[in-house]
Every structure is written in C-alpha cells, then in structure tokens.
Amino acid sequence: MGKTLAEIILGRKSGADATAGDIVVAQVDLVFVQDGTGPLAVRQLEASGFNEVASPSRTALFLDHAAPSPARELSNDHMLLRAFARSTGARLFDVGEGVCHQLVAEELASPGEVILGADSHTTTAGGLGAFATGMGSTDIAMAMALGKTWLRVPESFRIAVEGQFARGIFAKDLILHLIGLIGADGATYKALEFVGGTVDNMTIAERLTIANMAIEAGGKAGLFASDETTRNYLAEHGREDRYLPLRADADAIYERTIEIDAASLEPTVSMPHTVDNTALAQHLKGTIVQQSFIGTCTNGRLDDLRVAATILKGRRRHPGTRLIVAPASTSVLKAAIDAGHIQTLIEAGAVIDPPGCAACVGIHQGVLGDGENCISTANRNFHGRMGNPNSCIYLASPATAAASAIAGEITDPREFL
Amino acid sequence: MILRGRAFKVGDNISTDHIIPGKWFHLRSNLPELAKHCLEDIAPDFVSKVREGDLLVAGKNFGLGSSREHAPLVIKMAGIKAILAESTARIFFRNAINLGLPVLICDTTQVDDGNELEIDLTASRIKDVTNGNHLTFGRIPEVMLDILDEGGLVPYIQKHGDFKL
Image (tube, rainbow over all chains, first blue to last red; front, side):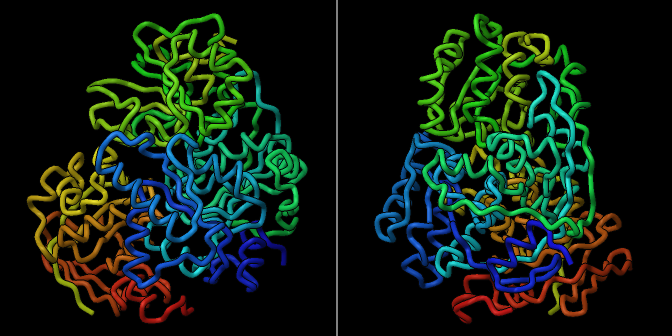
C-alpha cells in the first residue's frame, strides 16, 4: 500500500511501518527554540535533571521575537539563552540574524528530516521536504535531551494545484484562499501535502510561504516533495550533499483531496480576527490602513521585497499610512541592498526594521494604536496579536500590502502593475 | 480518577494570543505576574472569578495559534483542573497534557457557565450535576494517559528516562 510523504518520512525516522494513526517514536534531526519559548524549555530541561543536549550542532536557539530587546526582562531571557548555548554547545543565532524559520531554511533544514521547533510556524521547513512541526517548550526540552520524540502519524490532505497564477497573484493568495476554504481548524492534526503542476513550478520561497501557514488551518505539517528546485536551493546554501529526493507514492491514501485552480485565484485578504475570514482585496476598497507591514517568516524573503519594491518604485506611501519592512534574515537584507530594493523602499517612505519577527508579535517595532488597521504580510491576525486588542489586522501578499500602502486603503495590487 | 468542579465558560476560537496576549511577552519568565493577564482581553473577570478546582469549558478550536506553553501553564496556575472543549488546537492539547492538565473533547454546548460537573477520567464520562445531562469524551491516546498519570512530561521522563509506547 502506498505511503503519503508524512508516512514516508516518519517511517524512515522511526524504523516503523508508519501508517496514519500510528504512534511512533522518531529520531529528531533538528530541534530549536526562540526567545519566547526557549527560557521555559531550558528550565524544563534542567527540572528533568538534564544538563546537556543530545546533539549540540543540531540544537539551535534563535533570538528573533524581541530583537533587539525592548525590555530588560527580555534582555535577561536573551542572557539565559546565550549562557545555555555556551554551556551546551548549542548553536546560537543572535539578535539581528533573522527569523528562526528563515534561518532554518537557509542553513539547517534538509529533505526527509524530522524538525521540531518551539514555535508554531516550524511547519515552514516542509517547503524543503522536511517533516517539521511546532511543539511547546516541554516537548522541545525533552527532544533536546533525548534526540527523539513521540508523534502520531497524521492523516494527510492532498492539495492539488494546477494552472498558472495570473499577474498580481502569489503563493500567499493561494494559502489564504485554501484556509478560507477549509477553515482555521479545517486540517487540525492533519498534514497538508501540496502537489500538482503549479507546485512543481514553485520556487522554494513560495513553498516556504505556503508551508509556513499550514498551522493556520490547524495542520501538523505542510509538506512538499523534494525535487531539482530543492536540490538547487540546497546547493546555493552550501549543502547539496543533504539532498534527498522524496515524493509521496502514487497510490498513497489521503483523507481528503482538495483541487485548486491557481489561474482562478484573485488577490485575497484575511479580515480580522481569524485567518479563515477571507475576502477579495478588491471588495475591501475603502478600508483605511494606518500601517502596512511587509516581512516575517511568511513573506520577508528576497522575492517578497522585490515584489514590494517593484510596486513602490517611483511612488510614495500614502501620508496616512506607515510602511514598515522587516527582511527575514541578514542574507535577505544584504541581497535586497545589493539589488537596490532597500533604496527603492526607503525612497517610497519605508522604515526598515532589523531582520527578525519585528511587528508581527506585538511587542515592538510597529505596535498598533487604538482603532488602527494594519495590512500585514504575516500569518496571523488574531485579536490583540500586534500588541493592541483595539486594533485590526488584515493579512495579504506583499503586493497587496505595497499597493495598500500607496493608496492608504486596502487595494488590489493589479491597480499598480 | 474523579474530578468535581464548577464550569467557567468561554466561547469558540480562543487563541493563545487571548490566553496570554503578546504584549505581556516580557513577563514569560515571571509566571505569577503573567498569570494575572490570563484571558484578559476576552474574559476580563476570569482571573478574579476563577476558583481552585474550576473547569474551563470552551467551544471550538480552543488554544489555536502559537506554541507558547505559557498558555496552558497560566490556566493551570489559575486553579483550573481540566479543560473541556468541543475541539482544541493540536499544539495546545499536547502542551496541556505535558503539564498534567487534562483536556477533554466533548459536546460543551449544553454546559452553562457555573454548572457543577463531575468527571470520571477512567470511564470517560462527565455528569452535569446542575442540569442532569451526561456527556462522553473522546479517547486520549495511551501515551498521553501515561503522561497525565505521572503528572506531566517532566515527571514522566524523570521516572522512565525515555518514551515508553
């Protein structure tokens, strides 16, 4: 009987005939925390009597959520994590290096791996064919100590995408459309496996954007087959030797198949306060936005900044709309400088935040005021998410966020293309 | 194992940003202070009203969003002995069990705020003492029952040294 990609990877890593519904103990190839979840993981590790980690070179700590730190309590948490890195030999990615999920993709993840992160958007690495999932601090602490974890092998949804995106339509519109279709709990405990001609032609950046948001439908993982595009990405990042071609069997058993015609998609927006509350950008004209935020682990990559810069070139942000741009990593920032995108964005009136989570998590670098609206390229628009329960977040592609910054209201980006 | 307690009712789609708003991110290493803000944007009276032994009764997709384990942790610190919900997010469910806090998936629509409930964890039965209804809840995987029995994942690993399936 054929296997899904989730079953194939968990079978390889557990030594069991992993079939959906089984509970297995799997070897963990990479385990990481960020500054919001790491201190509790360190304390739980110590409470359990461990003072070392199973694989220091495959244990990573990221200071990205509060970076640079806006409060002394968080500065102290950063100190705790730096000290833990020194004492265990775990890899530390300090303030300003970037968002954990982007750095995991650039430097650490490879196809066929099991990756656990104390951050819900760990699913991002599924774009490289890794079974990557988020867990809480205690699970992560035990995975750090033992180098393994227990997992229920998830049933998979097959998301089959065919057709070409029209001009002005991007991977972000596809994933927002899908979540609107199945709901914020439509895939709870399931793996989403993306296949089809559109997916085969996607860049790794696009795959990472989609895998990143699998959790927003409740998914345990968002998975892509590894192919020549994956091999090329790994080669560009100095680890072609880690390439492993993996693809679900043709006769794999899926709980559900959802077919999407990419050519029929239009610029899509998630309205407050849930990601599945979707509408077309053109129907939200007239919704004033006081802030446009372009960045995050969802859409802070070079391609995203290029799209935004293309739309904003020779234009200015609306005087009533702040434009905040946060590259997802140092290497994204440097490449965007080299390509002239940062110059273009600054000339359009953008504030450039340091690489990191920036305004997404509501603690610094773009907290909203009472009654304000933000159009954001992030992945989550929950009530209070950006630091103020009396504000609203609309999620969209970098193109829609850039167009809305110019117009001062939510705008279909095709008006500026 | 029998749990008895009073229902504190909340609605659907309560996210971890509701349970612990991101603006209190800097208090995550100061749990007693963090706990004062539990659910403050959606149920401002939660912290003042909840009593030791109460049961948190929620609707659909409880605990969606971030992986922050501080969310079930502050609920437990408030004195809640179990969470009942129509459905929960995956990471939240696992986090709560890891802290020794049972999460029971059942039809909560008939349970009103303040009702007295009696939960038989072994028999998977809940009796609503106030309205006389009986509810059943979904099976918890064996490995999770073992973790709950030990009081959470830390004591479980301290005892077994490994995962025992």
